[in-house]
Amino acid sequence: MRFGFDIDDTLINLREHAFHLYNRKLNQNVSLDIFRALKTVEIHEAFGLEKETGGKMWTSLLEEIYFTDCPAFDGAIEFLMKLQKEGHEIFYITSCPKEYCLKTLHWVKEKGFPVIHANFYCGMQDHEKINFIKNLKLDYYFDDKPAVLETLFDVSTKVYVKDQSYNQHVDIPRVKNWNEFIINS
View 1 (tube, rainbow, N blue to C red):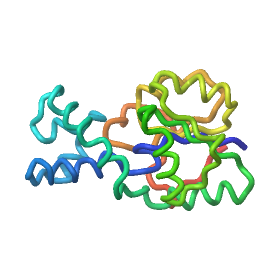
View 2 (view 1 turned 30 degrees about the horizontal axis):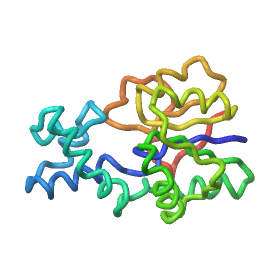
View 3 (view 1 turned 180 degrees about the horizontal axis):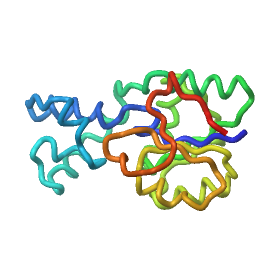
View 4 (view 1 turned 90 degrees about the vertical axis):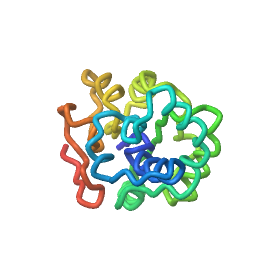
């Protein structure tokens, strides 16, 4: 079978990693409870930052957010390794900025995810992911963002949402914990 995965906040805990960086950079101690209650993908609100200021901060920290010690979600690497061992094809479809695609590919490999270069798609906008998902004829696709998931209601691909505070309104099967996740056909 063919499995597709978003990376940020689906396989790796990027927002929480960035949240800890924001706390350090802003010399604040905003609690994880506030982070876990956010209803938006953006995290600036938790720090009292306006959208524009928060966006500038995110941009200024991109390298540090994406390429430092951001952890994979528990069990994510093992789940993908199991899929690969069983002979399934794994595709990564990420909308990280184009200028970071090669660096992201290497970073994901270094983390231990099973990656075949030809199956790594990067640099598109969120709304463009649907074209890759359709063209690749994926059997399963996993993502966290409502803006992406809501474009996938009429595809034959079985779609799952990686559970996050900002996607609770999306009514599709959820992955809460990669260690406990079982695919329901």
